[in-house]
Amino acid sequence: MHTYRIGLDLGSTAAKAALLGNDDEVVDLLLDTSGDPPNQMAERLVGAFRQKHGFGEAGVVATGYGRALAGLAGKKVTEITCHARGVRLLHPDCASILDIGGQDAKAIRLGPDGGVEDFAMNDRCAAGTGSFLEVAARRYKIGIAELSSFCGDDPNSGAEAEAFEISSTCVVFAESELIGLNARGVPPREALRAVHRAIAKRVVLLLKQVSARGPLYFTGGVARNTTLRSAVGAASGLEPRLAEHAQFTGAIGAALFV
Ligand code: ADP
Image (tube, rainbow, N blue to C red; front, side, top):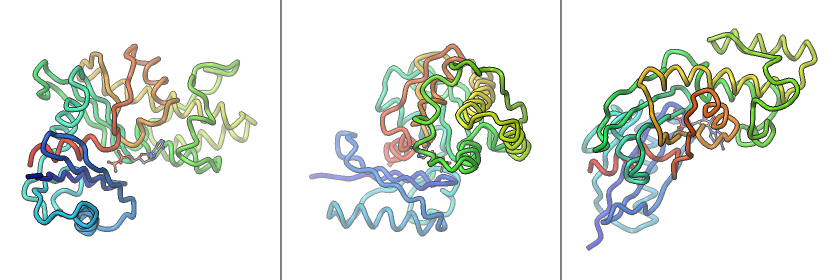
């Protein structure tokens, strides 16, 4: 008999759902970025899985910022634990994780058995998260998914590299620095590369805090940004690898707790 397990990661900007089969295989993944209350997104995502795959009952475990509101989840587990479990399922060699979402960033160091040895989180300040990239991309009218092809893979290359820096540790001030760069006629590509370097600098502090070591896997929606991935690589000396199903590792990990 086929039994399904559902993991929900109710994040601050997107709700993610993972459906796992008998052998821990990923059967389906769904994303909801509607911004509706977490309980509504949770019900819709579970309903969509039911309809698509035609099953009655399935165990549900929720994680993420909005997990407390997921009434239909039998259990709630913290994000750190779920990310660790999800990434290790997909990448058994993983020693550390960097997760960057819309509103927070986390660094996690794992032990040889995959357990969490140490973690650090930045959820107070948006400067090291996806929201800074969104603010900056919006300013130059570039889509978030196009940002890395616009900036190129190496944010430290180019004649102008290092000439422009964004030093503010707060998005509000960083945005005024960006306006300043614009007023000085700095090309958008250089200004946006500086944004990536500034985020990488903040993220590296988190990695240092937990004494992260490789292999380091990058998760969260922002992991798809290749410019940031190489900026973090250059600033940390580690080579972040893009985790499989990067935005869904928390949801996949949650499903493993059913
Ligand atoms: P959260 O768990 O905080 O809701 P996610 O891990 O789901 O966050 O990531 C959401 C963030 O991912 C958004 O803020 C968005 O900026 C970013 N993002 C989404 N798609 C892409 C993409 N193709 N390239 C780069 N960043 C992306």
